[in-house]
Length: 229
Image 1: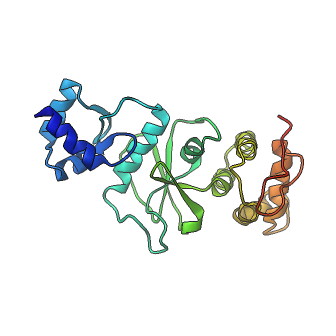
Image 2: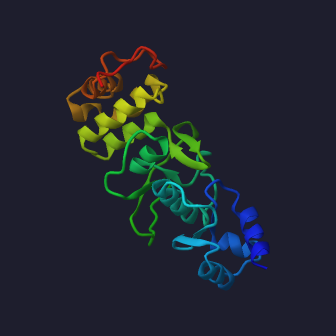
Image 3: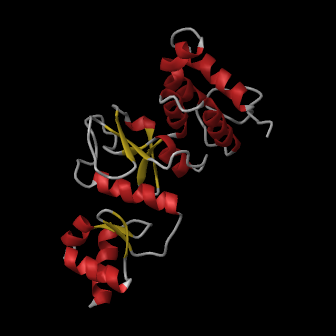
């Protein structure tokens, strides 16, 4: 019986982390009572409110982001009117998913299309109207692109030392692939840093210099950029 329930859960999950929500389980014919029973037997592990893991434990940071994204995305439409996903990892969650930095506060950050409250602990929701071009999908989780992630850190007044480290790592790994997009996303913050209104390219150059990237990469490439570290 237990193996049959686990097989149903695995099919319902459909993700690489082996995570399943109680709502997914119920749709697969596995009741909340049965989930509790499986947890008591050690067949599944509760990792967050309403989320269980069947697979062996992986990176706890990635698992935490995935579990909370599942809970947030389950009750809403998968996409917004613009075609962008309704729940998108941002801030330090995006940094972790892209592998370009470590956790600062331990919060889980997501962007949603309109103001929304949640009781999930350590979850920060920010309302913004994203376009599909601002979003990538990593391990089935929608996440801001690297360019948009760095701009988002600056927009939310993340300490510049943190932005420096993230940008330096993004360039080192060749994950920042469009300086045009990067400059576009930075443009609204240019005047906050003593530059002409809308001068996103000037701000990009300033950030590259701060991060220790010797030259500003050519448009749409980081091929000639390099770091001192």
